[in-house]
Image (cartoon, rainbow, N blue to C red; front, side):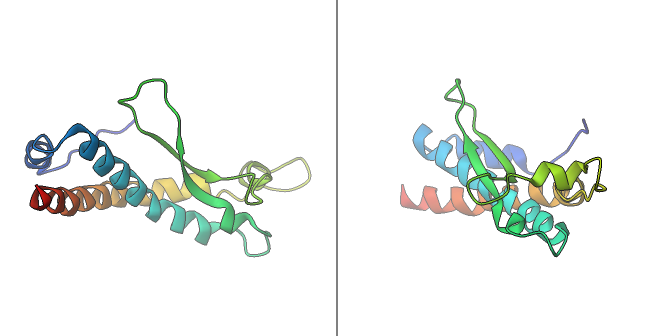
Length: 132
């Protein structure tokens, strides 16, 4: 695991504490969704061209958590949208070689996701404070 330093987080958190809990949670959910978009876009670009519905099946999905204070999302191909065979493409099989698309997308866009989340939070918090 790598250490990540974000400048200006203290100011963001200070402003965030001015908002009600419900609004804080909504801001965080929006920031996570926004930060998933670069990974989704990159993963879709890395999918081999002749692979059916796999591109469209890559989405960010909110997962349930036992702890109400934890927001859990995953970026992955969904079975409902036709991505049931994604693991076969990502890791390969005995008869076909691997064509990784999810892992490289995360590696390439991990820094950008943090920047996107930070920018989203700044804009959204200012908007929510203006409403108060």
